[in-house]
Amino acid sequence: MVLIARSDSWLHTSSGEPRGYIETPRLRELWFHTGTACNLRCPFCLEGSKPGDDRLQLMTLADVQPYIDEAVALGVENFSFTGGEPFVARDFHNILDYALGHRPCLVLTNGTRPLLQRLSQLEPLVNAAHPLRFRISIDYPDAARHEAGRGAGTYAESFDALKQLHTMGFEVSVARQWQSGEDTAAVEQAYRDELHRVGLPSDLRLISFPDFLPPGATADVPEISENCMTEHHTSESRAQFMCAFSRMVVKHSGRTGVYACTLVDDDPHYNLGATLKESLDTRVMLRHHRCFSCFSHGASCSEI
Image (cartoon, rainbow, N blue to C red):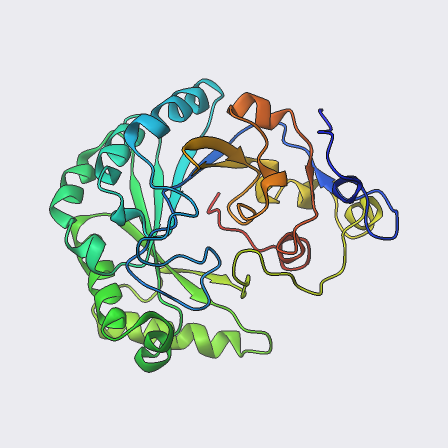
């Protein structure tokens, strides 16, 4: 396993202890960041996405095809796509068509106008060689609260997208905001009531996420040492960290690179190389403040 020569803070905590890390024995899931451009401007967005944003650039089929081919050769089980809003990328339906010829796919989307305007491009993908799933962000089971962050009309649009995709035959799920101290049972019942109200199965999968803060932000969280990873985790629980089985491809300044996971693309230390094979040979140090969410809460973007 390669230890990349980076600053001492990459390898050690501020107190000088060896920093906790994850090794990746094999690639099970490959994520693609389709770019930080989005039709919405949510103040809490962990990617800082907004209309026209190019911190991470839009992906094309030519960008992703070599990584899909390499991932298949490495035995990948699933492809997943996030943004920004993936359906802002004009080539996205072609990307999905190619990826679905090789493995199942998951798309994270806000389920608003960019998706709704391209349903006719998605419908043929019901018959693809592998299944396509969608996870739509509905932050709260309350229109006013959801739209306070995402904008007027987005609540109804997202439920409309859920229903239309489900009717077409795609598997769908909901991503929601989790808050410390919430009554989780009551919140989930409120979602089930809303799903039932619009004619969707009330048992759709709900995936909860804490506030990850905007890109470049810092958070006052404990640092993770090697000792933390053995005292508080087992080999089985360490294997559930996303960086233990996945990678994410991003495009920055015209070049693609492989990052450790979906939550650390604002830190160039986590660019692990130009190829998937190279990235898998690199130890992932748990230095990013979002790593603590994985360490303490088991937060994960993956459905594996």
